[in-house]
Image 1: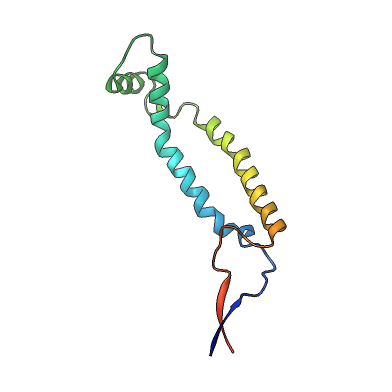
Image 2 (image 1 turned 180 degrees about the vertical axis):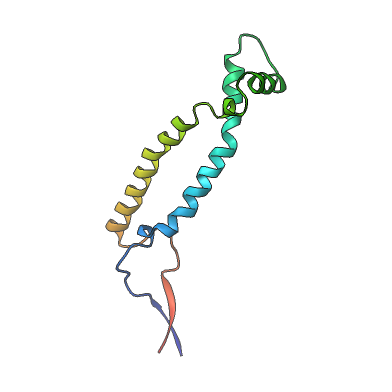
Length: 114
């Protein structure tokens, strides 16, 4: 006979395990890397002395600075993300300590065999 019971109390936070959060951070970094050139294009169009189309802006950046021109300032953005990620991790771990459960995981219940 199966009985619906809460699972046993975990001794370690599931969020504290690096394998749970690593894919998320890798995905966020990949998205940032792919979309960053769009931010550079927008900034260059806003600071151009005269109105330019997107194609003109891409052409100017490519001719003057090459591929690295599309990633100018990228390291600043990456290092700026580190504090926000640390705050997020500390907040999640603090909430876990206060509530005793992870708010991100909903599979706290399992079926036990009696």
